[in-house]
Amino acid sequence: MFSNRVEIISPGRLPNNLTIANVKAGNSNIRNPILASFAAKLLPYRGLGSGVLRAIKAYPDIDLIDDREANLFRAA
Image (cartoon, rainbow, N blue to C red; front, side, top):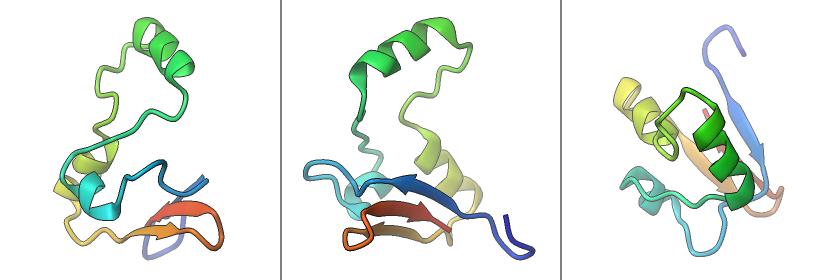
C-alpha cells in the first residue's frame, strides 16, 4: 500500500495464452484447480475468477501489467 495507490503483485506471469485484453474481457485461468475446487466448497466467497473485473468496475483506470521479464503480474 502506498499513499496514492494500492499495488497487488502476483508471482508468475499470466498463464498460457491469457493476455491483459483477455483479462479485461472477463477471462480467467485457474492456476491451481485442486486448491480452487476446495476453496469454492469451503469458503463463503462465490466470486471465483471475478476479482479483476470487480476492481476495474470500481476503478476503471487500473493498470494491469504482465511483466514476463520479472515473471510477475501486477495490478496498480
